[in-house]
Image (cartoon, rainbow, N blue to C red; front, side, top):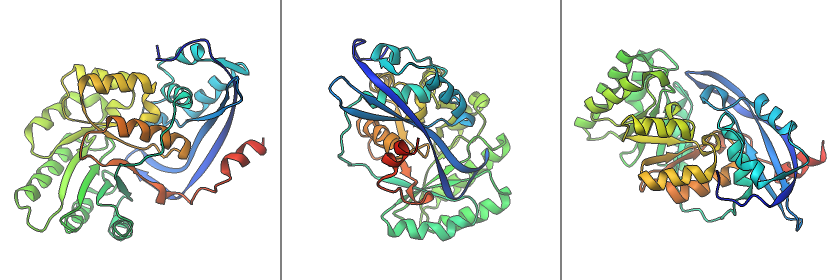
Length: 325
């Protein structure tokens, strides 16, 4: 159960949105062209309006957009906090969207962001633009092109200014042998650090079902490994911790489930957490960053440097979303 009383009742409305990436986002899962989600609007007895966002990523382990939409459609025009507390764990993005709409948002920002680079050679053309915007940590998608090509590009990225940090994200797309090759390569650069940037970690090198192999690799190499797809939801996060993972956890709050439960877990176990985006709008982002400010590991930049992937949001987009239905 969540931390909220069951008595409060809210008028409930919801709308579907689409945001097109300026260029398709390429990962080992394929090409992503359009981000779809659902904006919730709750109105309390005093007429106060609050918003939440459901931003599923089904291939990452959450429900699908259609499952989320169908769930919203079967709800009555008025919902209670007790009803919200009973949203099942099979709908983690819905859990986040509804409960985060009830939380008081703060607007302070004391976090630094990592900038997401495109896959392949385009990364070499993009990092400088992000550097000029103040980014000093960069995340690069690997496991997309041929490994020989990616290793050549990687060597060039290691020539970035030495104050930079680089995160490699495989999205579970490597074989065991290729994961070893990447880790060996990262360790070689670490042994000869002069003139090269720091590789902060290799993110999700293997598929979710290969947890034991990732645990083994984490003990064999100097380069840190972070779990991402393996810990997409709070249930997965708890399971991996119970199985012995004490490395880095990439947490995507918008698909993790109830914020209150995630907050309790992180505080109880003091995990090494890096909070990250699922390309949500400002509605979901503000709720996710609230958790990040509370729970992020010290000196870890958060993975929300993705605004450059979309056209700037119109300041009237939310009002227009409601007026056009």
